[in-house]
Length: 323
Image 1: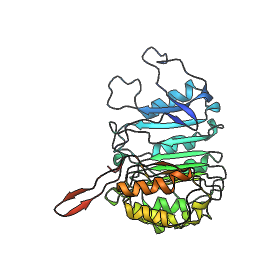
Image 2 (image 1 turned 60 degrees about the horizontal axis):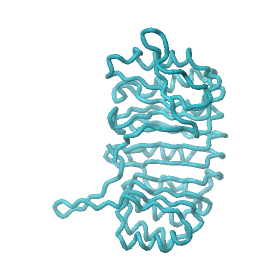
Image 3 (image 1 turned 90 degrees about the horizontal axis):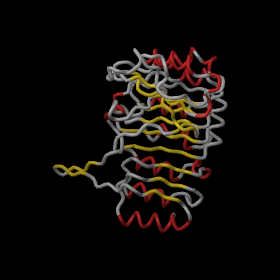
Image 4 (image 1 turned 120 degrees about the vertical axis):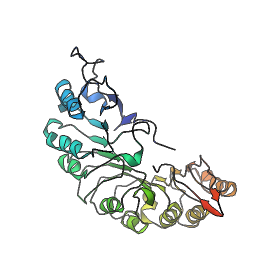
């Protein structure tokens, strides 16, 4: 699996791609009301006819064409050759213009699909300044782990935090775990694999699983990990799980061992949803999960049953998104 679809919405707003005016100075399409959509900004350096010189040119055009005081959500897509230029300048554009976006509630940086750049090619930077510059932000997301930095912080209003990566740095996981986010209700971490920088350990997740850091947390995704069995075992006895409505352990290398830990741990029948899609479970274990949890009303996703690869006596299991 690769990331092959752009965000369709953000903050419950439909995504709308802003296109700069053409040579005649007119917008390519009529612009929607500023507050009615999540604005997606991108620059395609490979399109010779793209009506902008660079991402900064797109940004300037957007500021001139749209009432930014009403904009509620921004999606930052391709900013050129993102494997050569990191997102630091995008962070600077967002932070230096914070006064222009008093209504901004959600930001996503790195909405690139595989045909634009593999997820491991996306060069990120320190994204902490965006959260600091927008204290009323409710949703924040990033795609790409290379070069990604986050510092522990306090944010009063953030409700959704998402990091999508083929390898999420352990330092970012520890920064999340060390942050004070009293309103956070949904956390999603694509942990990835060590080959692409995903060096977080189950121990790094301990403060999150302990349930003390984020009192409002109701949806937790610890996903896309080559340590999925370890994570499942840790979640099985984690205090935070007792108050969750949704638990997502999908996209990783979950086997019967991890599923057994889940079934042997604390009751999970209070969950509205348990997502285990893309897994390496046996048919027998899938049936047990359906009988013990599905029959109790838990909405489960057990799709994408994978088979491990075998080569010269070694068994290989793979996450859904790595490179």
